[in-house]
Image 1 (tube, one colour):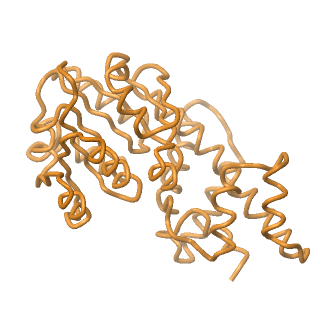
Image 2 (cartoon, rainbow, N blue to C red):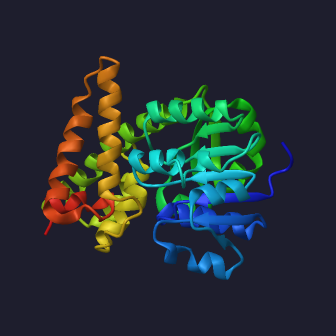
Amino acid sequence: MTEIKKIGFIGLGVMGHAIASHLLADGYELYVYNRTASKADDLVANGASYLPTPRQVAAASDLVITMVGYPTDVEEVYFDDTTGIFSGISAQKIVIDMTTSTPTLAKKIAEKASELDVLTLDAPVSGGDIGAKNRTLTIMAGGDQVAFDQVTAIFDKISKKAQYFGPAGSGQHVKMANQIGIAGTMTAMSELLVYAKAAGLDLPAVIETLLAGGANTWSLANYGPRILKDDYSPGFFVKHFIKDLKIALDESQKMGLDLPATQGALALYEKLADKGFNDAGTQALIKLWWD
């Protein structure tokens, strides 16, 4: 494959928009698509080209990156007979799905891509909106090793760590492990703040002190201060975290695993969604205790 100069980006949510902005600033010729076209307005104003379907993005680009909401969205973006990526892509190109999706769907994408002589990666990320904005994401990749080697320079521009784990679906499995870990740190952060508040402690001082000790977590460092400012804007949506935890538990069941702590976290987030916080950030979990 020739040098990657033209990148297609499909899905301009909180994280996808930031990543696409970086790639445009780095000098790549950028083609974008989003169901709500207006989310691309600033990118277009800065030189990106908006195309009306994923198919056209795939036809115009050397590399296509997708970062959409749910596995059903991924399925449509890739497999729709008239507008999907696979209806317009040509051989020797690369597709990377950075959506947190299912290992099963990652394998299905890889199988279809192989038929078309297209290289694929499932490469979900961790780091939230902050990581996307600061180019400090962590990328977990599965799929074609050749594809990973060819896009390493691009990953280096948007992440602090990118690791290849093996065949299609491997990246999604690592992301599920990540989400299981995040579930525990989010519940721990929420409960420690609830406890500290009930004890009448200075909450900023509690956070600062605990970050210097064994309770130091990414969740506490990044979401604790937001909670104290009553900032529940979505670095990562509650509804998407619920989706991720359901995938993790489904995959765990397939492997004969029982993960009660993760099940408990899912139940708490579903309760939070029922209270109207589906579109809030995951730090809104504290709202189960605080008004």
